[in-house]
Length: 283
Length: 283
Image 1 (cartoon, chains in turn blue, orange):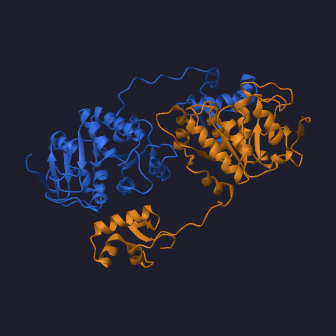
Image 2: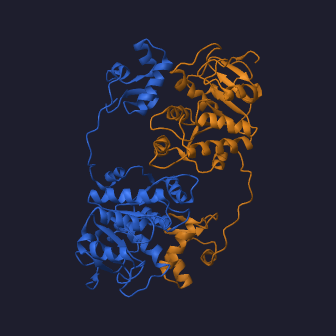
Image 3: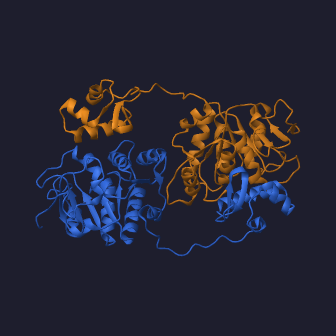
């Protein structure tokens, strides 16, 4: 392994994102591929060291999706969700960046993944080479995991855990926070549910991350909803259910139920005063 | 079975909640125990006809909890979540009310549960006795399920489903809407996740319903969090992490991490400007 690269804020390779966060690092060391650090956008994917099979699948699915869209996956190299996210990004041939709580020459855990990250990805640390991992380093370096990324995804996390600390940094830094929900009877869903209550965005599908990154989905065209007699009867106007029922000479109960169904399907939109209009048209 | 009771808005037994909703019914028919209709508060518990085992357990858990707290469980008698909610309430000896899309003498589905509801619970309908169920009756009567209740819980629901129509009525009626999250890889969680995105409250534990009902939890005292040197060092003051680090002659990185951990544990609160104070104390 070549010696770690030493970066200062004056270096052109210094990550711009770290210039605007509170408590920025004074210096950084990098092992692995420096070009990975230059890749943007970045999404942080973090979570528990003890995931459920569901959490494992979600972490891999999200990281794979990001890698296939050229998005760099940032995490903390920890066992569990972090490791799964790095590994899935590597497998998909995408850029991935691990921020360590120790010197980049002493990654923890030191295993096949840390070696592979040093070859194919990038290890980054504010701690000097030779520095051993210390317990309090990890929550502190979490501010760099969130700070380097444009968005943070928490996959599974206990009620009060390192991932929630990362989410707290992310909010302070103005980064968008996403949380994957899970079953209410599993402790590893508690942290994500707590984040959702506190205003995090609910992530069902990784494609929902793209707008936060200024990217377009790689997907087929949207099929417009089929035309419905009731939508046609609106004729581009803005009407109440009562007006529409009169126009159609139908019971208001039936018309209102259909309008609510069409609203759920995205074919009509409801404005103030119970006024309905075709979706996408301006009332 | 005794003949259905016929109710008019002028009757003292007329549910007050229906006086303030849009499109109130003109009359109601009741089979079963009239005293069940008088029981308040009420919570509507609704969901899919095709629940997962997880959804089944959650519906039963929520309805049992409500019944044990004397809360009336309102639902629509449909197979799946509705039936499970009624059944769990009956098993726990609590009041439960089914609002039908047909005459109360022609409940649908007509089975052992509808018979038991007519004996131990209450069947209610705006459709006259003898009226057969019709497809469009069901989403329309959903407004009474939400309208009769102080809060609505959606347990599992497809992306565009009857339960979401009920939630839409509930929002229009100013009722609090709760949704139980689930796995993002299961279609029956989609409806609840959609509601959570639209601002529904996330329900992990049925006890979270009690404040919406003006009830106190039946539970032990809260244990105060153990005193922490850092909390003691705040001495009732409002300080930044830097000020606290100076006072303790400790590195700000360590102090800030501990403050964030204590914040997650509820022992300290953060105000504007990064000022920390003991939780519960006014800055």
